[in-house]
Image (cartoon, rainbow, N blue to C red):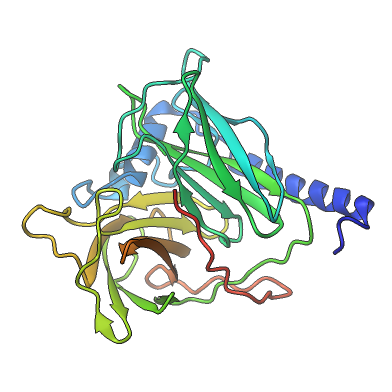
Length: 317
């Protein structure tokens, strides 16, 4: 669609994209039980010692489904994006008193992790905003294609619980949905990454990503944000958010820098999950993407009509 020559169609596309994102966000809604909120957030930020999802108060309400939880609210300065250009994206986290929060703990070497992805899980970005003195977080953000996007703010307010909040953003234009067939092998920039292990709902699942390049094991992965790999999992459909980290850490005397990076992930329900692994080698961070149904479940059916394209362009900051 030529948006410059068809302004009315452009406006209609914006309305459709924004309306669709609003409807999805409204459908999930915030969780009103603070106990349930804390249990869900703990599961989303779990490590290999965090037990099972079944131990949480609200196992069916993982992180990222609401913009407000536990007294904290994610408020962007705007909710529209422009494709094909880099813009400043800004937001605040307000606390139980209604004021902007300015004190955050450092988690994985950053005080704020921002994940931006289209609702069909295309265009994944893991970036790190900077905060001004008034509590406003800002980061350069570019999206290549039109659609409804989800932005996740992953943070830990000082003295509070680790929290992930989500908000919908809309980029107007000709939206072409992407379908991601089930796959456990990702190829990016000459690297091949294989994911082994099953995702079992309600239990801690061990998965291992093995990195090779040109047929040879990569044994000199470099630390990125204090780890040899970061794994984000999103449930297809509502984009329930899970952020897990690997066993061990660089320099602990036992954790090897590849080729395998092992994670312990907890998925809250049956279904298909999109997994995004950030790893650093030769001074550059790359993202490997996987589409994995839980044990015993069928992959998600493709949308109609199916779209082409692999969308392997990612940003890190």
